[in-house]
Image (cartoon, rainbow over all chains, first blue to last red):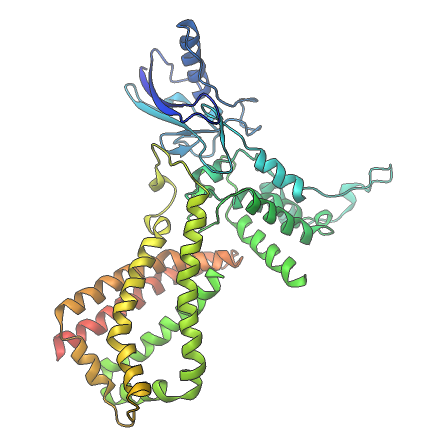
Length: 248
Length: 206
């Protein structure tokens, strides 16, 4: 198929940036979206132009690196997939595809489609962990009774890959689905109880400090999340936050 | 806090509707209940200030929230397909809310200000006051009817998202959520429709 691509080009963090049009031809419908981008970049390199910078790593939907806003949606029009899992069969011959970086004040553009998502790392560092004694006397996790229901819900929350599609899709650039998932995966398990109150308070405080917006429950994040993280995690985080502040 | 003030306002709305619908069935009962609401010290000096605070708080916090959220996204997308993942009402709460605020200025001027002037400034006795007559007179004007109907449409749109959003914000997302969503939709449609019915009833029957 032959396509017209409208891509955000920005030389660096200080550059104003603009949309630039490109044509790509003979794109196979079996290609992934990133393979199509590879074809474009090869074309640009061969003609002496600067290739389009974009984030990618595993290319199998588990690392959370790819981060494009395609035709007005994070990770494109398909559901439950990352950009690297998006296939060109989702598009038609002659289509014009708009490709932009994830937009949020807390995700500044580094170059072209690459954004700085270190804000997520700092939120994780603020409380997204449990303290374990690793001196050799570590308790076997299987020895701690956990209900199937709690284990399943914790595992569902833990599937968040931290790609930032939730922030990109939210009209408020809120990170509450990400933080909700990270709070939930520990809040549901006995190992997470010791630091539960500090965790939620510190992670929410860091989230606010990073300049993310507030959740107004549009639900866009849940729809666009490639891992299907549920809004229930935001509700759980809100409960944990209330509980932590009431207890003091 | 937006959610808590929303709960309070939604409860107030239900109570407001319950009293107003009496005007359709019995002018006397409506007058008696209105007299009670207008003269009971607990309602006048405790609940009324709480209500005014709740209204102002909800609007002010709504605007602060909107400004903070706009600051969180400084560059807009060239192409954004919001309809693919969220409802129009959820994305436009600020605009439906703004229209309701403008309507409330109009509504206060119609009913609340004359009541306060009559009671506290002119010091008139409220005994035997014909509240029903005031309502009927107000709804004679077709332009006013138009404004009220439009305002209640905006109120319905605001509630269609706001009702369930308030529960989600206080962490209430559980096995009852599905049922609650149905109840929320019914509340969001029936209460404004009820208010529209009351306005139209008085317009066409008097």
